[in-house]
Length: 319
Image 1 (cartoon, helix red, strand yellow):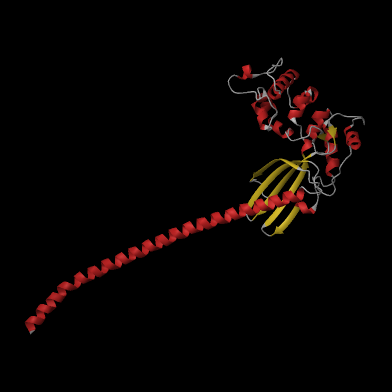
Image 2: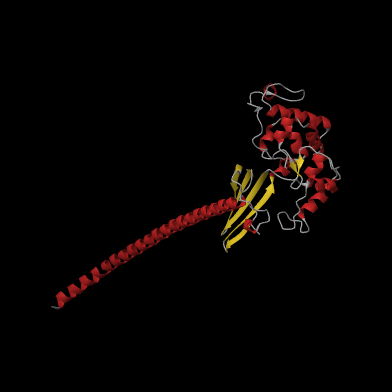
């Protein structure tokens, strides 16, 4: 019995460590499985979070577009630029603001060139620092671009001068940026890089003195800058801000008097804009969107046409 018991004990002593190593390996395997499951859950959670964030962003964009279109519909009705309906805080996270300006405060290059209004174009180009010969040459180049024929003006350029580029297009400009494709515009680019801010292809061709900036008024009408700035101050009122209750809408006689121009018929000048630009800025949470629309027609009478509409994401936040 003693001998058998000793042998049994000896065997148990030898088998014990073997069982322990198996148990350790199993435990390690379980730990690896748990780590793998944790990784899978974390990955799935990350993917789910990304999907939720993308869905929330899409909802924000959709909501912002809805608010912008609603504000556009309100602005296209018979409301004044200072109407409270154009500035609304819907909730803590949602608001919109509509800025309404007259597009006729800008110059329409197509109409000026179709009229061959060289005097106005010369005054503008001279204001930008060009010499008279440079201005006359550029006018010929611009006219050759928009006219329908291939007849080259004295200082202009047609297909032969542009080579195999498909230029000029021989049609009116479809955007202000297209003007930069005309030969000779590099001279203006160097002399006056802000030239694009003077033009709009949607303006009616009658300069609105209530909307035009002082430098445009000064250049087009040939008046001194002080008079043009005085007109602008009178127009904006005491607070100096556009589209507020103290804004003054001047009649033509009053505007011309401030500019020191005799009260006579002045061609292609007025005090109202047949074309309006609506800039709608919307905020939904931390998302900001801006919708710009150019409209023409009788606002609020069902005859308004949208000439252009674009959507951007402005860098400047709403105040």
